[in-house]
Amino acid sequence: MPATPASLLDPCGPAAGPADIRLVVTDMDGTLLDDAKRLPEGFWPMLAELRRRGVLFCPASGRQYATLHRQFARVAEGMVFIAENGTYVVRDGVELSSDPLDRSVVAGVVRTVRRLVAAGADVGAVVCGKRAAYVERTDEAFLAQVRTYYVEHRIVEDVTAVDDDVIKVALFDFGSAERGIAPGLAPFATTHQVVVSGEHWVDVMNRTANKGAALRGLQRELGITPAQTMVFGDYLNDLEMLDAAEWSFAMAGAHPEVVRRARHLAPSNNDGGVLRTVARVLGL
Image 1 (cartoon, rainbow, N blue to C red):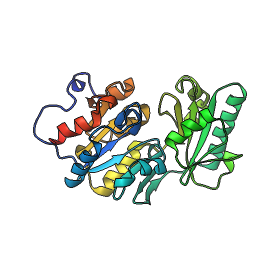
Image 2 (cartoon, one colour):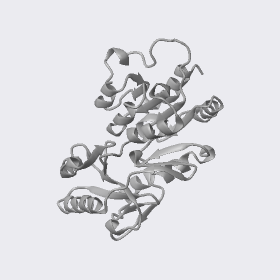
Image 3 (spheres, rainbow, N blue to C red):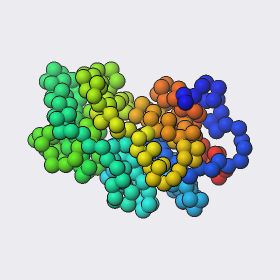
Image 4 (cartoon, rainbow, N blue to C red):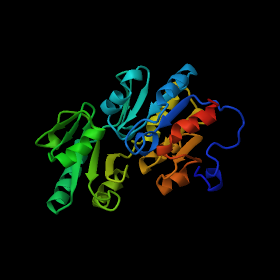
């Protein structure tokens, strides 16, 4: 249910003792990470305490699996990664679920981007496969953005011809993605998801793929209910997973639609909002 303004005034609701939380799921950029892309102070001790209590911590991000695994390499054993906005879910190197795109859709999106570039748009496509991300654009400004989210990436002549299962096409716009490239992808929105996942990013995925669908599948597999699940997010690609948890939190400063959809409001990512809220709800 969408949150009401009153429910957002108190980030954790009435104090009634520690909640029975079994699963904590958090977006990364703009949510767990601060604006400098750093984990909050005290994260590793908090994660150790969650594990001691039998609470599973799960990153859910538009970032690729390889990038997430590297960031959490020291504690990756047993951790579930909801990667690529829910299109690829992995635990201990084993795929739990995926939702690949049809090749014709990938080619259509890439052709659209090429036309936009030819018309003067400053955008680039990242074809996201299970093994790596693939790009044609080679300038350093674009590759610097790619490296942040896709540590496993390859420059190829034709991204439509890669030998990999493609689970998402991500588009980077050096301007505003919501006002820039997203409208140009409108024809794909009739059959697929065109999701603005950040200020400069738009993702094209199957209509059945999102972080919420991935989370609901994980809940079923683990026998964990929405009432036992905490979720944190800040942008439009987090909406469906907020719906999958009774303890759903929008970060302070989140997209207005995310604030409307969440049940509660957490402090900002720059104030360690995820850790502070988890500590309060679980009585840590």
